[in-house]
Length: 418
Image (cartoon, rainbow, N blue to C red; front, side, top):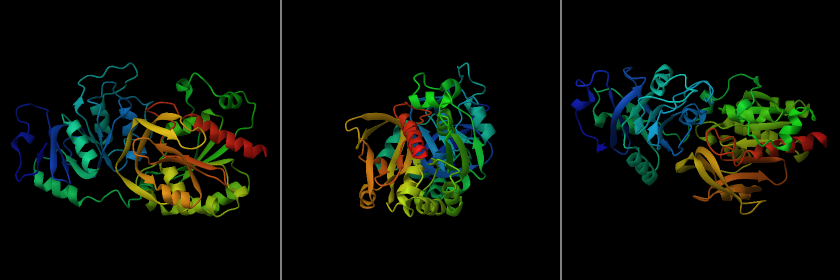
């Protein structure tokens, strides 16, 4: 790492090692990190985005394809990346979503029986640039101390460090961005894929009941703000019929669906960007949940961005975190119901719901993040609505919180049998 200076550094052009391409990550704070470019090299691209880090030790492919990472350059803190290659089963969306990928060491040879490709070739196919050989520990400490910043990632040698830093400083910040409009689902459709062989060995009673045909299938309308596939698999694995609809589906359409009894529950997915900018979805949720009689409010479950959107819909506020929570070992304590229980969770978010404003509008905090005390989950006391800031479906991560899907199913079943 070094501070920006004028002029092109000659070692960015690798004449001594055929095939080797040098790249740089320049931050808006003036620091520049060098390394070996991999993935989609030689295209002349200059990727400007928010730079964030993830502390998970596994699941880099799931992170790369998580829609919540759209508009971000992802730094992986685990030092060795690429050792398990990539495969078509471990993706969370149809494509790589990150704007760039930064690692300490890119393994030269992957070793996993499920792998169908190696990481660099996969990123090249997806048009995403990576940077290896970076001191990711120093980079992560910088982000933790000063907060996430805008950055520029490129393998172009004709731009000076100072020019790259200037581009980073001109980059549009994440705050105020409605990325759901670009990343969320565009058309309605049904989802029927289950967990299959990856289903937990210990099945809950709800799953057993659904699979045995003992209950009528529950119908879930899922607002697709950029949903991870494993979330949807957990719903279908519990016998739910999942109908994906675009996040900007008008309020009157949703109201009609539930007033006619065409669905039993509403799910709001994860997604990228600033939640306060997703105006149409907030307005639809407000009309469906906050401004209706409690008896007409459908059982509702939100995850991550869905949690934030629900908070905004009921009148709470959100704010940007200094560097966010991104990893698979985030401790969450249940603040209501089962006091004292701690879950280790998978998380990926840069915004949070403001506690005071949530309580002021009648929300009850159910979970809190033990590292910084931020709201990690809440429910509405007078209506069947609950949500969490973290990812109970994991992928990657622990399965401590998968029972939240059971709670959603139980809530829908109770309403359906009432």
